[in-house]
Length: 110
Length: 113
Image (cartoon, rainbow over all chains, first blue to last red; front, side, top):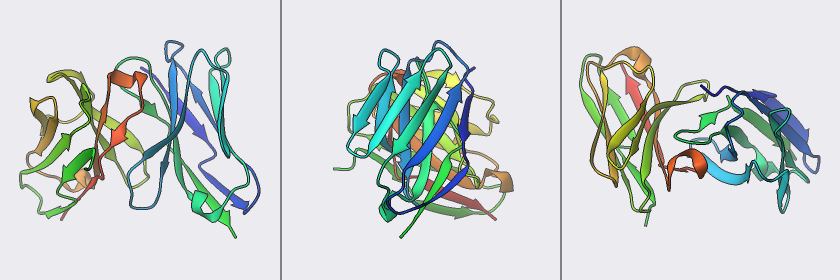
């Protein structure tokens, strides 16, 4: 089955800095890579996704890159704000279920 | 209207009891899931249902049983609850398998005492 590794497990940045979270996956058949944000006590919510036929996607301050050859993808957040503080999950899938990484706790200090 | 709704939000129960968690989606999605999130925040797939047919059943104890009366509902029944079952359980749905993002329910925090 698919295996998704996510790093780092925690990330602390100052407000205004950039944050990068990286994931690798094992199954070359995976073709869909979403990212979820989970605030404390809330449900995971989809913030951006990318498909295997695209190398990069951007939505305002967040962007995702995908390298299919190396089987890794990354989330980039620019100009971080305190409200970006949350746990971020990457995931990989292609058919029946998504496999999630173990999450990154992002802390943005004012 | 809430897209994916779960009840109850909190559930405290004693070891050995049997309990159910209900999930309903009004998005018209074909696939529904149950995920378990442990204290370390890891999201682990438990079950997946597509048009009322179980398509994935990970290494979950048979004390856990999903029940789907129709494609808009996927309930989770747990027999003989154990301390290790304490976790947050999330229901989710997607238009069609893992090719689209999931919409999660608000979660059910189960505490077994």
